[in-house]
Length: 18
Image (tube, rainbow, N blue to C red; front, side):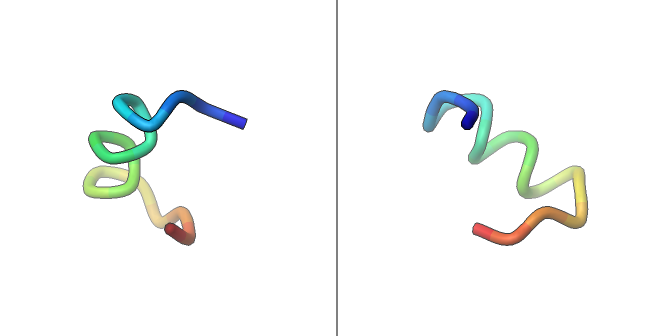
């Protein structure tokens, strides 16, 4: 889906599963 870099930052700010 999203790159690991964006996923980490996004996961902290958005209610998305790891």
